[in-house]
Every structure is written in structure tokens, then in C-alpha cells.
Image 1 (cartoon, helix red, strand yellow):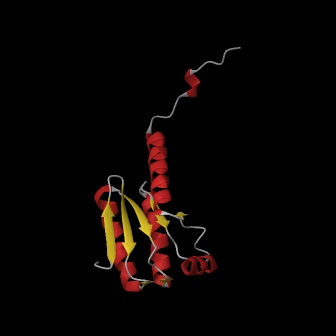
Image 2 (cartoon, rainbow, N blue to C red):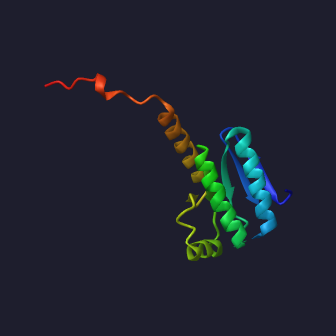
Image 3 (cartoon, rainbow, N blue to C red):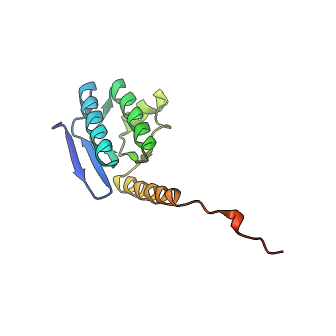
Amino acid sequence: MTNLKINTKEKFTTITPIDAEMTAILSADLIQLCTKLLQEKAGNIVLNLANTTQLHIDAIAGITALQQQFYEKNASFVICCIQDLVEIELESSGVLELWNTTPTESEAWDIIQMEEIERELMDGEDMDFEKFEVPE
């Protein structure tokens, strides 16, 4: 996994592929790493594609499935810094609209923080509105 730069923060881990081409092998490494992180602590992931100029179909399918797994486990998976050529490729394959994307890594952090707050609010007890009486 030397072709993946990993930067761990308190609330999330940023993973940046170093190679310009995301091959099936690199995609498998990415999926293995993210799955491990999800099982360990339900961590949030920022996938920074700033260096990536080509995604193989296996990588596109793998990232799409990976994002779904994270959200099913109440963890965030945000993809940022998508290069123009990759964006065109994702758009033509119909995947771009499925991905949770942002233009910058900083905006990805913001999304994760907002989703964390949302999950905390959703985990709180639901208010019982039947206890409240409406004044007439």
C-alpha cells in the first residue's frame, strides 16, 4: 500500500492515491485499507483524488460500493479534488451523481463534521410530541 498516502486525523482519515492511474490493483489496496478502517473504528474517510487522472472501471465500481458500505455503517466517505478528465469519465458512466464529492479537501472535512453532528442528533432520543399539549 505504498502507493497510498494516509493522513489520520481525530475524526477522519484522508487517503490520497499517489499514482496518476488508479488500476485494479491499487483499487483493491484502497478497498482493503478502507474496509479495515471501517471495521476498526467506523472511521470517516476523505478520498483525495488530486493526483489521479485515470480510474479503471474496477476502481469506479469499488469506490462506489465502498462509499455505500461506509454510509450503511453510519460513517462518512467523501471524495474530493477530482480532476477534470476523471470527472468527465465519472459523468459518462453515471457514477458522479452517486458519489459524495467536494471540490476541495477542506470542504470534505466540513461535510464530515456536518454528517457527524447529524448522526449525533439522530442518535439522540426522539422527542415524544404526545407529551406536549397545544395551548388553545
